Image (cartoon, rainbow, N blue to C red; front, side):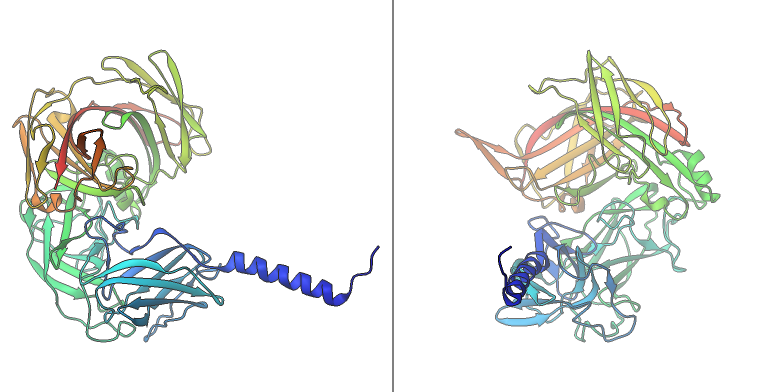
Length: 541
C-alpha cells in the first residue's frame, strides 16, 4: 500500500467536503418561484407582482434549514430567521425582507413598504451561500385572497365577526358582514417588522357574484404583520355554495375565490356533494366522496377522478365548480387549478394505483397522480377521439388502502349548445363584460343548466393561462360574464402558422350529464358524470 500523508488525506477530505457543501447548500429559487403568498399568481398574469408591504413566498431548494423555523410571536419581527435572509435590490438600494417563515423548500417574508416600485432583484442567503439573483416586479397594489387550500383558488379564508370560518356548513347570509383575509393592499408608513397599524387605506372594491359589495374596512389586520382584512356586507341578491368573490385594490383585480351563502340556515344546498353529505358534515360526521368525470372538448378526451375526505373543519376543501348564475377564474400552469374547474377538491383518499376505463374497443389506465387524484388523456396516439355520444364507458378500480373495488357505467352525452356569439376569432375586450349567446342544448341535462368556459394563454407554448368557468341557465340562450371576471384574464398570445395568425383564446359551452351514483367500501357516496362541449376561438385583448 503506498504511503499517504495525513496532510494530503486531510486536504483531500476537506476539499471534497467543501465541494459537496457548496453543491448541496447553495440556495436555488425556482422559475416563477416568487409569488404573492395568497394568490400565488404567476408572473405575466393579471394581479401578479409583489405589492409593497405584502407577504410573498419564495419556493426552491436549499433556501433554509431542513426543520422549518417560524418567526417569533413578538415584535419587531426579524430579517434573519434560521440563518436565512432575503436581500432585495431596487433602484440601487438594498433592503432586507422581514422574515416570517424559513425552511429548505419555502420562505415567507414581507416586502418592505419602502422598496420602490418597478423592476427589482432578490437574493436568498443561507449558511454562507447566496442564490442567483431573481428578477421580479414590485407594484403598489396586488391583493391576494387567502384560500382554504392555500393555493389561491376555491373557498376563501373568510369569517364572520366572531371569527368563525365560512364553509358549506357555516354559511353567510345576505346582509352579513364578512371579514376577508388577504395581503397586498399596499404600503404602510411604519415599519413592516412592527405591530401593524389599524385603519383603512388604499382604493378597494369588492365584487360578490354579479354585485359590488359595500366595503366597511380595508387595511392591515391588527393581529399579523403584512396581513390585510377587507370587511364587506354580503349583497342581498347572492346565494350558493360557491359564490365568487374578488377584490380590486388600486385598480388591479385579485385572484377569484368563493364564499358560501344561504338565505336561511347554516348550510347551503347546491353543492354536488348533496344535502345528505352536507347534513352529515354539519352534524360533525366524516364523509368520503368520489367524483369521476369524462370530458370531451377543447383539450381532447380526458378522464379524471378524485376521492376526498371531509369533516366539518375541512369542509372548505370541497370545491366543485361555481354556483348557478356566477363565474370564477383560476390560473393554471404553475400551482394549477386541478385538471378542470369542475373539481378543485384535494383528492387525498387512495383508491389504488390506477383506475381502468373500458369502452369503444379500448382499455385505458388512469394513473394515480398523487393521493386520490387520477387522470388520463383518452385520445389515441394519433389524436383520434375516444369518447363518442351515446356510447357506454365503464370506469372501475381494484381498490386501494382506503377505498374498495368498484365499477360503474356512464353513457356519454353527445350534445352541446352551439355558440352564436362571439363569432369565430372575434376580439373580446378585457375592459368590459362578455355576453355569450347560443342555440340548442338539452333541457333535461345538468338540471337545465350549461357550463360556460374560457381560456386565454399568455405564451405560444400554452404553459401559462387563466381559465374561467360559469354556470348558467340554458333556457335564456345567453349569459353575460361580468367585467370584473373578464379583467382577471390576460391578453391572448398569437400563434403563427405560416401566414395565419391564430389567437390563443377560446370560449366554449357544454352540458354535464345527470350523475350516476355508485358505491364502494370506504365511500359515503360516489358519482360519475360527463361533459361534452364545443369551443370557439377568440382573442382576449
